[in-house]
Image (tube, rainbow, N blue to C red; front, side, top):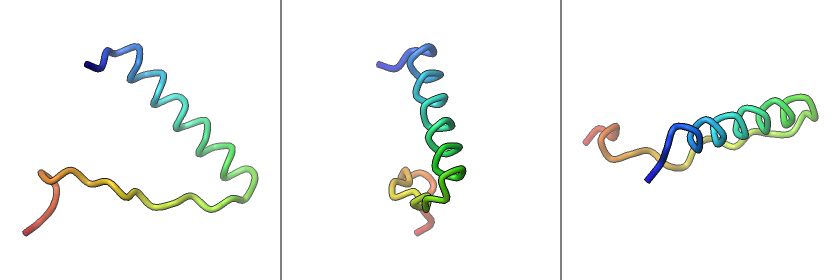
Length: 41
């Protein structure tokens, strides 16, 4: 199960990666996972 400290660490890691990718001019892939609750039938 996720805990808040783990979730915050993952979020910080993602933000840092996105910032580094933008600074390096690397492409940022579009999200591939979308929970079923958000999919329109």
